[in-house]
Image (tube, rainbow, N blue to C red; front, side, top):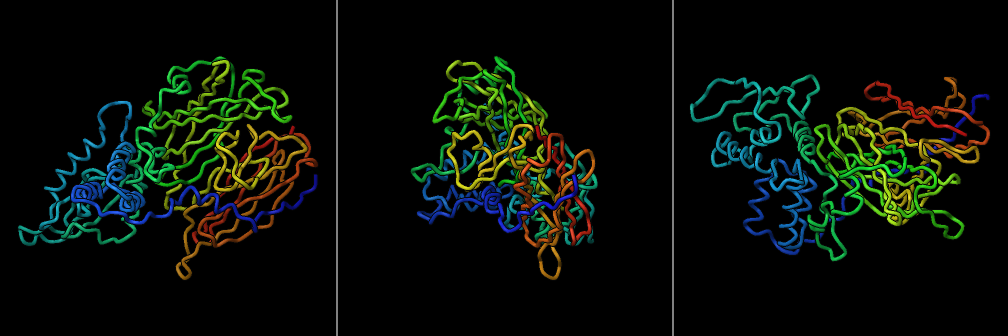
Length: 478
């Protein structure tokens, strides 16, 4: 096959759909002022509170919502929701009391200084070096604090140095503040718990967000395999609170779940649940939903799942339950969730799709986990396509360095498709200055490609930093 040009989808952007994961709801109008206790609580947790959390808390209408917010706030940081105690909250309150005393400046409690915030997020420094003379005995001196790698916290060069002045403030300005905010995001153990509102306009209570002892959760707790299946994560996008949104597909073997025929289309009503286990073997998050799985000509069924997880390595236990037969199976897969909050440009894994459709479907749609805003991304399990189908590929770029004169990034990207190591199609390079870009290509008809295995590749050149990046994904036509 001769090399051909691919059509780059540069005029129609999927950016609004991607941004939907990062933007919160519009702020509510203040209905009543915070009372003394609510203001004190806000001050107490300020060192670890995220900016969007603070805004949400201040915008809440009444005391009951603020009280519920406080419960959700601590639950999001609880390392183990199955124990009655919140270990993180207890540790924080002890550390805060110590910081209030040790780093007090004048009449300001230590936890409200930058020194206190640093210690509450990073722990005590490994080394402290004074960078000024001793000065009056009653006054602090400027210092350089050195922190080395510690469990759950790794630094770029194995350590980091932070300067604090005599008033326990950060002279570095916003840059260090942004880095500390990212550490604060890392304290969120359960990003699936949030401050969403119900139909009545009030916060959904924590008790209503926690996993219920449903049949699918019982299946995940005591796994069994009544039938065979497979699972594969496919979509990774940045979402609020330093987490990433992960979506994937589960496929069960032919003729294993109850199939129904509605209007000539075969579907299978199932319940799909996911349990994310961290490297310590603890449950990091769970999700479940009822869905109408897609049924293929051979009788196999495919359904999507999705959840928010903070960066790290997980075992995802994906359960599929047929409520009619009560048969179910649990499939495990290993997932490494990327950190899209890094300082340099990062690219999501390529998402290979059979279709990109406008218009949000229902929560019961088989591919509902791949619905972003008003756009539906429809993949095939294992990236296997039929000759009569087309292929669409999309990725998202984050943290592109900006030019000093314009404050805008500049990067050039292109796509190519290869078979047996030989490039057979490619796009023209496209240069963008968008701070959040979603490079895409397609639809590419597969009729003329023929059966076989292919590789699609995205090349990105950071024109500001001068670095080259690439992402690859396989797909098959058969």
